[in-house]
Image 1 (cartoon, one colour):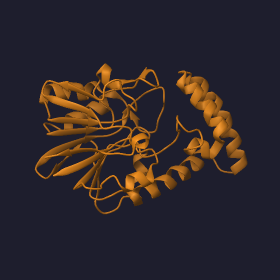
Image 2 (cartoon, rainbow, N blue to C red):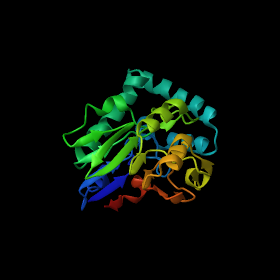
Image 3 (cartoon, rainbow, N blue to C red):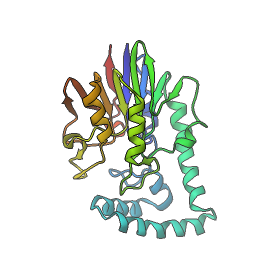
Image 4 (cartoon, one colour):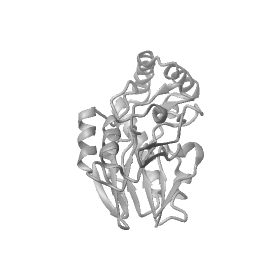
Length: 259
C-alpha cells in the first residue's frame, strides 16, 4: 500500500491534480484555501480583492508580528471594497473561498482522506466533495488494515483564521481517536523544533494534546503540516516518528508512505 500525503495546498490546483500519481490513496491534511501568499503578493484572496501593493503591506505588518495593526489597516480596505462592490464583507469572502474550493475539489484525486486546516471553512466542504473523498475530524478509518486517525483545525491564535478551536475542544477530538497506527493532523505536536518557523521567525501553535496522546499510545507515525519552514521536519517521541509532510504549495511534491 502506498499513500501520498499533502498539507498546506493553498490553492495549488495543478499540483494537487497530480498529488495522487503512483499512489493507492491520498491523505490531505488541510489548508486548501489561499488567503494570503507571503512569497507572492499577487496571489490569493487578499490580492484578488485589494491588489498586490496592499497585500505586500499587509504581509509586512503580519511578518513583523503587528497583528492588531494589520487587522485595523485591512478593515479600512474591506470598508472600501464593500462600497465598491456593493456587497457585504461576508459575501465577498465567501464567493472567493467557494471559487477556490470548486477548483480544488474538482482536481483532487480519489480515493482521498481529508481533514481541515486552520484556514479552511468546514461548512463549505460538503458542497464540493466528490465520491471517493472522505472527510474525518476526530475520527478513525481503516486503510488497508492500518488504523488512521485524523484531527483537523488549529488552535486559537493571533492570526484569527477561520477554523481555530480552543485547546479543550481540540483535546477532545484527539482523545476520541484512541490507539491508532498513524495519527494525521494539520498542526504538529507541541515540540519547539517542530513548531518554530525559521523564515517567519516565530513559533506556530502546536498541540499539547497530540504530544500527550503520542507519549501515551505511541503510534507508528504522526503526520502534519502547518509550519511551512520548520526548524526540524522530523522528531521522535519514544518509538513514534513525527513528520512534517511539507509545504505543498511551495514544493509541489507529496510525502509518500508505504506499508
